[in-house]
Image (cartoon, rainbow over all chains, first blue to last red; front, side, top):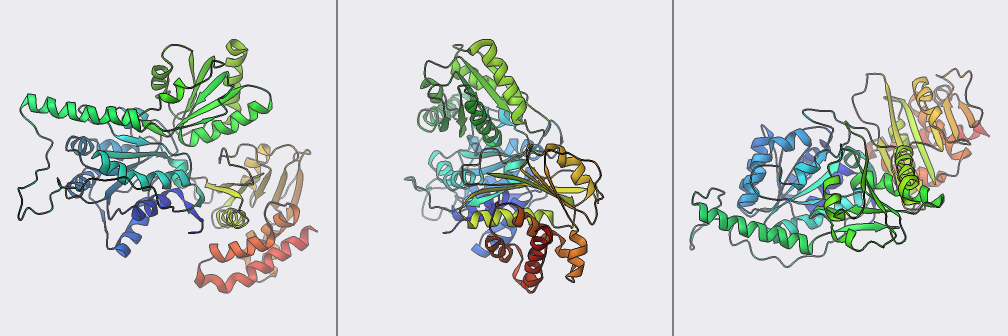
Length: 353
Length: 177
C-alpha cells in the first residue's frame, strides 16, 4: 500500500483497526481528540463499536469488560484522563487482560496545559495505579513508528495478557508524516480460553482481580512478576545512534529523541563525540543498550520534556559508572537544540575532554 | 533540506499551504513532516505550521531556525522573521503588511497576495499566489507535484476550484520574476 500523509492521532486509529481492534471506548481530551473522532467514523465501517463514555472511569471499565470477553479493544486519552483511568488499569492488569491504552501526554500536573510533555513517564513505567504491576510501554518517535508499534501491540497484549501503553506527546499526535500500513510479524498466540464468551458446554470463566486469601494473592503476584521479568529479558528495544566512539551519550525518547538526533549531528559536525540511546520500550527499560557501549563513554545526558523522570532509570542502567546529567523543559515547552548543545558542550568541556 | 514556517491568521489557508508542500514532497519521495502550532490561540490571532522537506532522515520536526518563512499577516512576520537562518528567505503578503525596517541578511520578497487573488476573481486563493512565489524562488518542491498535491488536499467536491488555484500559483510565480 502506498504511503499516506497522516496526522499522528488519525494514524493511531487506523493502525489499531488494521490490527484487528473493533472496540473503542473513550472520553474527549486535547491533544488526542482526533483519535476518537477517527474511530467514531471508521469503526462502524468495519462493524466495530465506538462509544463515547460518560467519563474516563466508565470508558476504562468498558475496556475491562470488552477485554474480559476476549475482544481487541483500546482506549485513548491524555494525562489527566489517564490518571482517572488508573483504577481500571490496575484491575485490568490484575485480571491479566490484554488491551491497548494510548496516552498523548500534555503538560501537568493537575489539568496542566495542552502542549506536549513527557511528564507521565513515572506513571506509565512504574505501574501508575495501585498494586505491584507493570504495563508494557512503547515510546514511538515518529508517526510511522507509532503505527508499526500499535499494530504489534495487540499481539503483545494478547501474548502476555497484559495492557500495553503507547506513550506519545502532543507533537506526535498533531504532526503529519507519511505512513505506510505494513502487515506486522505475527506472534504465536494461545487461544483466549479464559475469556467470558458464554459458558454453554464448559465450566464458567471468571474475570476478577479480587483475591481475599493472602497466600493465593501472593502466588498471583509471583506469576505477574515472572511475566514482567520475561518482558525485561526478551522485549527490550532501543536505537543506538553514533555511539561507537561516543564520549557523551545522550538518552532521549519520543519527540525529544528526534531533537536530540539533530543535536548529535550538529555536534558531530563540530567534531564533538556524542551519541544517542533512544529507548523504544520504556518498560521494559532498555538496560542492555548501556551494557554494550564502548569504553570511550565518559558521561550521560538525559533529555526530556519533564523534570527528569527518566534519569532514575538511566542511573540504574549506568550503575554509578559514569555521571548522568539532565537537560529538560516542562509545562509544554519543547527543548530547543541550542540549549541542549549548550549543556552538552559544558559537560564535554568539564569532564569528557 | 528545507525547513519552512507558514504563518498567518486563521482562514488565510496557511495550514493547507504547508500541507500541500508536505504532500508534494512526499510525491517526490522525500521525507516530510508537518506540524501545526496548536494551543490556546486568540480569535483572529496567528496560526502557523512547520514543514520539513528533505532527502535525508528528518531529525527534529520542530523548527527553530527556518530557511523560509511565509508570513501572511504582520504578527506572523514580527514573530518569525527573527528566527530565520542568515541567508534565509522571507516571503510576505504585501497586501496586508507594510514593511519598514527589517533584517538585511536575508532575502525578502513582498507579494500583494490578496490584490492578485482578487484580480483572479477569488480572494481566497491568496495563499496559492504566495505558493507560486515560493515555488518560483526556491527549489523546495516542483510545481507539478504541488498541482498533484492540490488534488489531495482539496476535497473532491471542491475540485471545481482547481483551475483558479492553479492560476493563482502561476500569477504568484509570474509576479516574482
